[in-house]
Length: 299
Length: 263
Image 1 (spheres, one colour):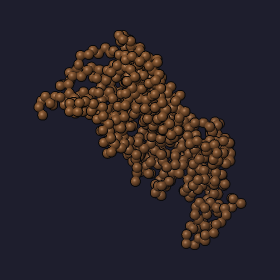
Image 2 (cartoon, rainbow over the protein chains, first blue to last red):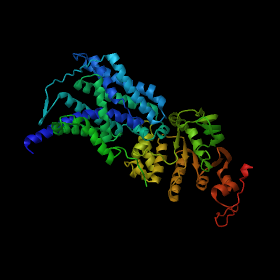
Image 3 (cartoon, chains in turn cyan, yellow):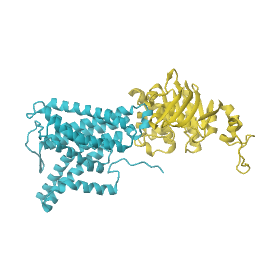
Image 4 (cartoon, chains in turn green, cyan):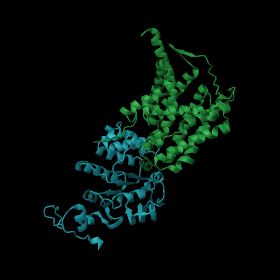
């Protein structure tokens, strides 16, 4: 392999990893809800879209009110998470998981239908004061937004790992995920922890919406990044935070390599399905994902 | 301290599982509730602790008082805050949490300092748990899981513990070890225990007072030593013949003796 080829590979890897970390950030929202409440949130992409729209609306075309926009987006998404749990999901407690899944699918359709009425359907920008000058890392030159996204994602992963391992609230949340009835008998208010999980998803979605919105522009299409969540979490394991991180990076890298090496031969488009092929292969070998929680069986 | 007065429990609004059950749990002692499978023992415990609600069950008649407070109809997490803890049948540890994290979750209603003290106390009573502190609870042995389930319940600093079949699936020597520790807890921590057991001999040996349950009703009650001498209890729960000798399957005539309490 010549030095040039090696540089090309390295550039693809770095580019893929940084995009992958941004996928992982969104997947994190999905994992948080699944871990605590066993609910599969099919509206994760719509959460991100909504956050992006709110951020764009407050920020305006000049991007003057950056701090305000971030705070407002966070507040709106946290409120949205709490409200959603209270109004839609709590009445479904104790019902089959399918009921909750259907509710989130309905919610996704509703958000896609309603948000253009409120925010308009034109593509809007989320201008962040980070410039356009590509950042050179070795042989790769990455757009600054990708670097920012990767850094934010890593920070969030560290924070959440700490939260679930070391804080009493995080341990209680894992207890709820493990066995709701027993957790309640330990004095844990299960419903409150469900609400907290949805609010945390709101926080992750807010950040995801600002970053992805800034990179792609915000309109209804932004919800499509939510679809990438599925190969990510299935690769990593539905309930594993570390798995979401690794799954995100794998999906990003596979996309990037497919685009770099396969597209020239077939004319393009391989990056859109390569992650799903990998997902199916992994499911054959490890049905609970790379880091997913195994059912513990003592014999 | 805990008094259950004439309660009726209905599942799914139609299935009547408990009828007129009354039980008094004495302070600082073990009270035991005996009975065969399906008699309604576990349902009674769940009615007290409040977890019945998450199984679509409901106390439809009667009252449950914990001290002065009426607790029937309260949510399980609120009952726990008042100082009542339940150890579930079949251990039910948080499998994916470590031993110590199980204890931390058990002390949810306590302050941070009290949780540290509580963990030390549990390790003093169950030294084996200290050795397993950072191991995932799902991989502990059955006896260790039972110890963890009891220790986890102690973390909320309860005044009363509902203990559901701690002997289930454990070797006799372990059962004895665990009952020994429970006895010490009652003495040293001034705990009151409502013990549900199928192992009647063991339960009546440690309890001060006992109740016998059949088909959702209390059919017999009395001081534990009186119950031990009761001929029906001997025959049906202790496996002894009227003379007190161990019954052997060789010389059993298979006629069905009526239980006297049924009339």
